[in-house]
Image (tube, rainbow over all chains, first blue to last red; front, side, top):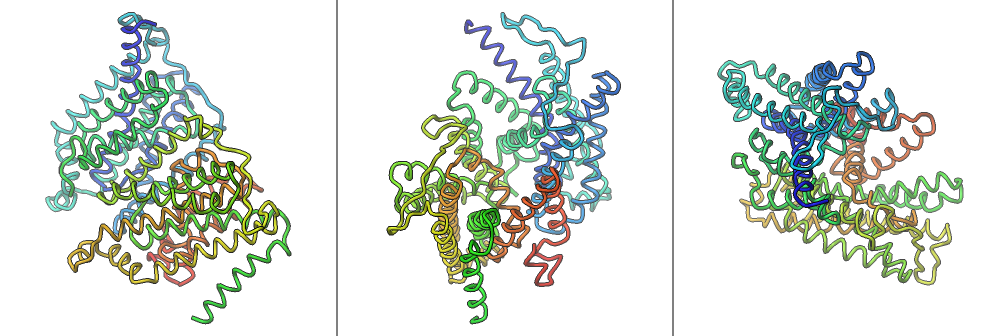
Amino acid sequence: MSFVPDFFGQALNGLSYGVLLFLLSVGLTLIFGMLDVVNLAHGSFYMLGAYAGLATIAVTGNYWLAMLVAPVAVGGIGALLERACLRPLYRRSPLDQVLLTFGFIYLFEDLVKWIWGGRIRSIPPPEAFSGSVQFFGATVPSYRLFVIVFGLVMAVALWLLIERTRLGAIIRAGVFDAEMTAGVGVNIDLVFTGVFAFGAALGGLSGVIAGPIQSASPPMGAGILIPALIVVVVGGLGSLKGSLVGSLIIGQAETFGKAWLPGASMVIIYVVMALVVLLRPQGLFGRALK
Amino acid sequence: MIVRLLGVGALVAAAAVFPAVAGAYPVKLLQEILVWGVFAMSLDLLLGYAGMVSFGHSAFFGIGGYVAALALKQSPHALSALVLPALVAALAALVIGFFSIRVSGVYFIMLTLAFSQMFYAYAFQVAWLGAEDGIIGVPRPRLLGLDLANRTVFHLYLVVLVALAALVLWRVVRSPFGHVLRGIQENEGRMEAVGYAVQRYKLLAFVIAGTVAGVAGSLYTQFVGSITPDAFFWTTSGEALLMVIIGGTGTLWGAVLGAAAFILLQSLVSSYTERWMLILGLTFILFVLFAPGGIVGALRGRVGRRA
């Protein structure tokens, strides 16, 4: 394979992976910024989204409907989790919350294995994007292009939502100082649940979108969690921009690493993260540490 | 004090003579509990005393395991089985700790996680560590003329070493050093203000915990006869964390209790149903929600508060 098509093929693969990581890590970073909770169960939302999508397609045969049902279902699970389990822990040390979400990884993974079985299931891409296109001499599945475009549109929409609406202003205020935000009359309890559910829904959405690329299996949640955490740390905890830039960096680093430095590929992203934590602990776009 | 010493002595003796009264499977379970107990205790030194939540403790467990496997294949002696793994783990803990203690909280969690995952990725990919298959067929060492391939001898060796490791950790947490660690956990800023070199204390705690974890890893290799990259994977750290929390943080023996609960529950549940992970997850969630002091906390009647 010649260099240029290979390069573009890899770059597009990296971009579609990065976009998936972005949708996942936005929720993670918002939840951390607002609730101070490192949600280790976030990868599970991704997996739950993939399976909710699978179930929807099995019943209706409609991929687009799955893209709607999965985030709603997973968002509901997230809201329930926050209300029933996390809320009682806010007065305790943050460690307790991290540990609680760690327990949910096991719970969700085994529940899904129970219902759907442990084998790998593929989700077919929607009819309209089942082919492939030529792009700078590289053959790219058109579904990947759809994922990239969709992800970038979502990034713009999220940016508008958070930077340009009243709701976004409340969320930003909550990330900055939750207590103060409550003090000026915002129902912060509701915002907490809302942000957690919204983050979970985005995680579920990324799961259903990832389905046709990576297929679905119960351990997929624990597998994606670490790259997503790395993105959040590299980009800066609580930062939307950081989450986008971090995802794109990690997406490319991992994809090109696998293709060009197969011996070192898995180590690269950890080295990137360790360097960022040591040299710029607040992340690329994070505020200085509290 | 005397009562407590007698109690511990009786426990060790009971563990030692256990193979005389129990079948092969229960003995295997007990040995597994002992090995994981050492690992969990070493994590408890960080988690329960120094207040350092490490998600990368598997790094030292894996290093101990791999060094033991490589060395024992060369020459099956005590040096290979215990001294080398402990030394290399200590060295690794010194380096990793040097960087990791610069940050705290979430960043400490993430940095330790990153380091352990680097080892996982490396061990998973390089041929000289057996890549994803790991190192198999590791012989048990000869020690002071005793052949540890003999099952009874190996059991006694394990019990003695685990008791020694527990004794060392117990001495550490009871020493003035251990009290400074508790102080750091309570309020790091205050300890710094009254003149303690907090960073040095944290680094030393990290190295001691890493060394003991290395010994645990080495014992694991000798127990199983092989080691795989999974020893480095972050879920290994996670499982040790589960054990410490279920047992009760900051008590050392809680960690062993947690290891016992974890392994017994696992073997019990798996023999009835495939839903082990579900039950583990639920148990853990219930503990975090309703008994944050773990089993020890519940025994002391302090449910609802961290012991």
